[in-house]
Length: 237
View 1 (cartoon, rainbow, N blue to C red):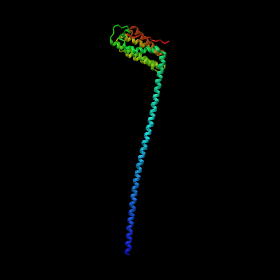
View 2 (tube, rainbow, N blue to C red; view 1 turned 60 degrees about the vertical axis):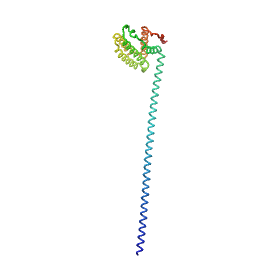
View 3 (cartoon, one colour; view 1 turned 90 degrees about the vertical axis):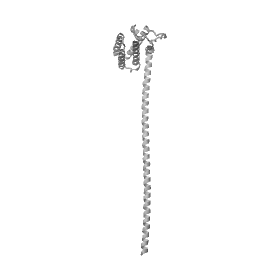
View 4 (cartoon, rainbow, N blue to C red; view 1 turned 90 degrees about the horizontal axis):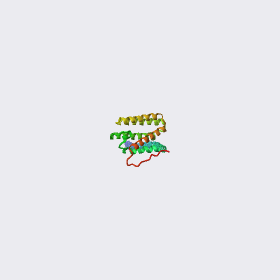
């Protein structure tokens, strides 16, 4: 009977050992499985992050492409505007060669003139008045060219810009310190202001170049450009 108990005890011990080994191996396998699962999760997270980075990069490239084509479109429009303006200038030069040439010659020569007040029949004057008149005349020529060259080609818009330039000249004239000269300029500005109110765009351009040409002729008559070869103004046929 004792042998039976001993055998049963041995069998029980062996069974416990086997069960323990099985349980240990199970948990070891379970632990390895969890490690593999954790690694798989980390790889998946990294993959999703990389995918997100790729999506972000593609989105940025699309935005950059849209910005590029938008800027390209703007550049094309700017070039078109420039081409149109160049075309307008060429047409104006073809139609008013005398006016444009006189305007450019006036701007080139005006700073060399030392007795500009003589065109207003002033014999006694100072350097300050001469400088003021130079600034005023340069402003008048540049303003006239701006109206002729840069404004939209409709009568209403040109009248608006021309009136604005005349207002600017009025402010410049206020700085002239000789009342006789200042009043003479005010009268001329008021005459031009009334003229442009009802004139067409072509009439306004004609009048601009006519006034510049008259001013140029006055300067030639009163002063003459010393030591400069005479330049003949080409009249439009």
